[in-house]
Length: 468
Image (cartoon, rainbow, N blue to C red; front, top):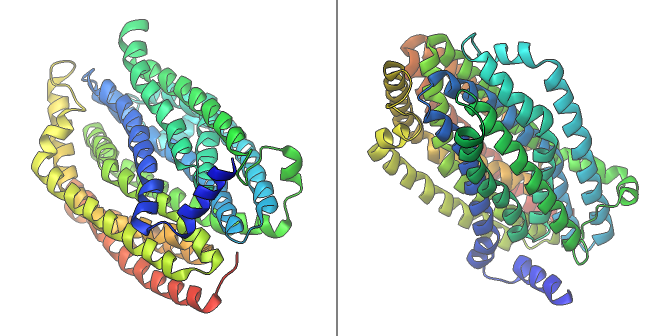
């Protein structure tokens, strides 16, 4: 046990930065990709029905799934970042209290969210872009995945953040990956074997629900095991003893992180509403693209999340040179991934989008229109990948340093000042093509603003010195 704790300390303090970043980021990237794949698997198998209305329904429910991620960031990113910073100044007892407070806070918020979605499901789905042709499918998926399963999903993500920030990246990744692998196995079983034809959406939702339950159980087991040696706790008594100042610090980082994801979700709502105004096929095509383009995003978020504990620890301990080197290394890796993804999607956009829509079953004309929209949207939107990464990288780095105000400012400006206004303007001027181009314009402007904020945050970090 002592040796394990020593190895974690070595990774944060003395291990070469590329090696330490790889140790933290690679398991996180793998879990991000597996989690993404199992989210994509629902869309993939539903696409095999050739039913564009089912695909459109799943696309608009993505907004509610992303909101779960947003709420989990409130305690996962906020509590995890503070836990790592407390470990950096050897305040392990308070770190345990913060981790326990974060877990129980996530449980309470998850229950409230599921209840609200259950009560206001129908008007909410219509607001998000559901039509009479898609509402029944959207309602089926939302009830099982969000109302019944939202709590398991949110607690899983929160616990994974806490494990990762305590140096247990592999365990966090294993738990999330387990749910992903199980969902990939259960999807075709429920959709095409156990349930009758026409119930594919219910089958996909049931597979996701059961997978999230298993993942949550495994992560809680790993968390309890890690708590024997790490500054983690599941004690309700510990949660009650957390200092009020620590609670403020959790929310100082967690709220901006939640808002960042929430505003991203709001942008998706606007995309869905504008796309559905053109046609259900445009909405389905955009839904496919928003799944596909998340592959490089998942890799880049994995890099950012892997770097975050190292940045937090060295920021609080005063080793700012190591912190800066970690930030530079992560930035380089992410930009390489982003430019590689542009090349691949430009070359293979048609082949990739056809994976998610069958032309041998269902309505051929609607399927071909959906594929045409998806191919066009993907070739345009993938060009935003480098700017999108710079936005994520800057935001995660500032969160790691406890700079919640700058993170929140960046989130508001990126989405509300740049991306969403560009979306409405370019859609009005150029239709569906303009809607796709809005992502490039919005992310570019957001990235330029983010880099300016980051430069200012680094200067303040140098002036501040060590501390939580």
